[in-house]
Structure formats: C-alpha cells, structure tokens
Amino acid sequence: MNHVLNSDRPDKVALIEGDHAFTYAQVESRIVQFASGLLAGRSDLEEARIAFLIPAGVDYVTALHGVWRAGGIAIPLNVASAESEWEHCLTSAGVTQVIVDQQTLAGIEGLCDRLAMPIATVSDTVTDSVLPLPELSPQRRAMIVFTSGTTSKPKGAVTTHGNIAAQIETLVTAWEWQPEDVIPLFLPLHHVHGIINVLSCALWAGATVHAMPRLDLTALCAQVAADTFSVFMAVPTIYVKLIDHLETLEDEEVQGISEGFANMRLNVSGSAACPVEVFEEWRDLTGQVLLERYGMTEIGMALSNPYRGERRPGYVGQALPDVAVQLVDEEGDIVTGEGTPGEIRIQSPTVFLEYWGNAEATEASFSEGWFCTGDIAVIEDGYYRIMGRSSVDIIKSGGYKLSALEIENKLLAHPQIAEVAVVGIADRTWGEAVAAVVALKGDGDMTLDALKSWCDGKLSSYKVPKQLQVVDALPRNAMGKVVKPALKPLFE
Image 1 (spheres, rainbow, N blue to C red):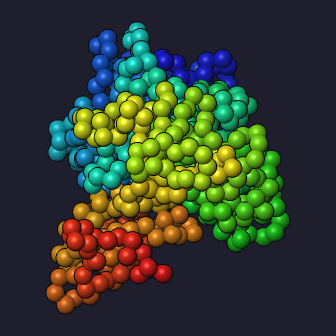
Image 2: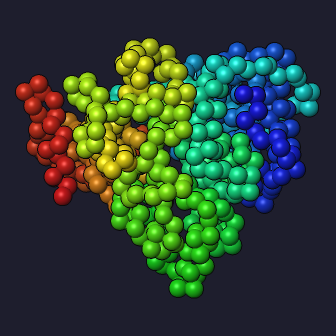
Image 3: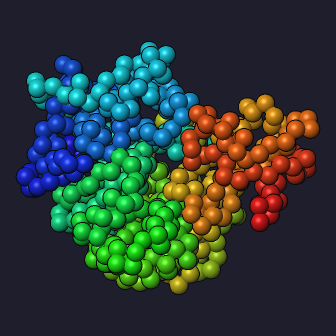
C-alpha cells in the first residue's frame, strides 16, 4: 500500500494546478521529501494523527500521501469550516501536528496557538535529506474523515490502507478508469467523493487531475469546450448551477460547452440524490446520461448504475464489485424479493474500521458483521432506489450530509431563540435546503437575514438556514420529542 500513486509512466502529467504541471515523478519525489521531513529522524510515525488544511493542488496531494507514507493517519480538514468545527476535529482525534499552505495558515494559526499544537507549511516540511520510509500493512490505519451523523458532533471514520485500496480498486474496475483520462477536481477534499472517487482513482490509474481550489464556472466551461476532460464528477447542485449558467450564454457558446460534455466518456453524479428533472435536463443539453451511485464516508461507494448498460434516473443501480448488500426491514428480517423497503446493510473490504475513540458508536453501527447505513432503499426491476434516511436528522444539501442536531445546538445559543427544529426542505439547487423552525423568547420577531448574519462565523456557510419559520411552540409528541414531519408543510 506504499504506492497508491501510479508509477508506470513517471514522465506523464499527474496534476495540473493553475499554470503549473507536475509529472508523476515530480509528485512522487515531493511526497518522499515531505514524508522524510515529517519523520524528522524517526523510522515510523506509528499512526500519529496529522491534520491538514489545504485546498486542491500539489500541496494537498503531498500532505495526504506524505502522511500515509510516513506511517501517520491523515486527517483532511474542511477549508470552509468554522473554527469551532476544526477544534472538534483536532481535539477529538488527538492530532499532534497541523499542515497548511500559505493561504490557509492565517485562518487556523490562532487556534493552533491556543491548543499548543505545532503547525507547519508543506514547503517548510519538505527536506532534501530523504529517509527510508516504513513498510505499511493493509491493516494499518490510514485516514480519519469526519462525518456528520445523527449525533450532534461529527464522528471520525477511520479507514485502513486496505480499505482505501479496496475503495479505489472497485471504482477503477467498475468505471473503467484509464491512464488517458483527464478530470477536473473542484469537490471538497475532506469527503470521500473528492478524496477517493476523483483524486485517488485518477492517480491510481495514471490519469491527469486538474486541481481547482474553487469552482469557477466560466473557466471550467471554457476547458470543457476545449475538450480538456474525459471524465466529470460532481454533486447534483453543481449540475443545476451548470444548467442555469448555460441559460445565460449565447447559443454558440452553449453549443461548444454542450459538445465538450458530450465528448466525455463519463459524467457521474453523487453525494445526494439527483432529481429526475436535473438528470433529464442534463441529458437533453449534453447527451450525457448521468451515472448515479451511492456511498458513504464509512463504506466508500457501494452501489452504482452500470458504466456499460442502462442508467436509470432516480436509481443508484446495483452492487459494485466486492460489495455485498442486503436490505433489512424494521423487524430485522432480510428483505427478499422486490418492492419491499429495507435498511441498506453492507459487507465489503471497503467498509471502515471504526469511529475514532468511540467504541460504542462503532458497535452500534454494525449488526452481525454488516454495516448499517441508516438509509432505506427498495429494489425495483433489479435496481436500488434510495427512499431516504431512517432518521429525520440528516439533511443532504449540496453534496454535504448535515446533522440537524448539530445545527440546532448552535442556533439554541441565539439569545432570542427558545426552541428550534431544523429540517431539510426539497430544493432544486441544493437537493435539500436547511430550514429552521423557531419559537422565540418574549414578544420579539426574527427575520431570515438577521439569523443569517448572527450565524456568520458560528456555522459553516452551507449549514446556515436558507429558510425560516417563526412559531409559538414546536409540535411535540407524548415523549416530548419534536414531531419533525409536521414541520415540513410550513414551508410549502
């Protein structure tokens, strides 16, 4: 597992960042120099947790692979997070060092000072005196990715080197990755969609990645029109933004961009359900039939529409190679036959090891060796269709899986709010939009704009409510629990 970087053609371009191109040999050399600098004379980091806050680019790849190769556990942080969220990740995982680049240094430096946690840039860590790097077994822990579960605080999902290799190999096989592929990378790099599906699959296959620290639709569309890419992966929100963007352009320009997409071998949509209307609009516009798939932080990808074969709108396809799937009903019985809903449960070498420092949550997430996803699905005509969460406390918005409880806990700190419930409301752009129902203290009033400005700096932008309803009191059941299904009609 030392080499998840393809070494077949060292002179081939692995990564393009702005005006700079880096070959596989150059990236490999930088990774080894960085790993040696991290080791600082030691023979093995022995699973020390190293976090990094770096946007897409050569520094990100250097940090991720360098931590792996030095024997550490890599923890990619969300560059868009609020400081309190970084602090939770750093303290709960027992991080020993933070790696940044020049752009992100200022944002997290104060927090690291307060926590007395060493911080360094990638370029400061790189050394010319290269050390022998440790041999790593597939069982070694490799990465912690934080997931917003149904609890109020994100949990750190631990994957081993073997898990990561399995996650990559299943997709390289299923989606027929090849060294000639070229893909843009603009997805967040603290989630498996960006880390595994795009970056790691491409580098494993010997393909070329165009790293984009932020999504620039105009620049992206210009590259698409120039036939730069062969593969494209995005969340439904980005496909909606592209459709809306094309509507603002002249016909000739639209034609060039549409042809650029049409010439690609694969367009993938994931991280949230793709609305059928978006699927159909995209097909009408570009001729591309989106490949929808289903996965989670804890399992990588589990289900996928076929690369060769019928891709159905509204469905996530069938089990990927080396993935066993079963549906289990509310009585705990395995669902046989089609048309009966059940919770998706997974067994595969791709399934994560544990939640960091949380044996109770780890144990609760497995049943007889099967990982319980909490997602409800039904099989129809051989294809899986996701029906939603078994919990109402997960909101899938713009590719993020958000915890309503976490957002509620933050909003309760507002001096005017007596009680609050957060729900996901169907939204064309975001899949689900975060919506808050609040009961206020006293006789005051609250506007959405006022709530948004209060949230600034306290919640990541994608967690801030996009809709607000003020009520006298929240509806509760006999147990005192808020009846969330009764709240959604307020927004219709």
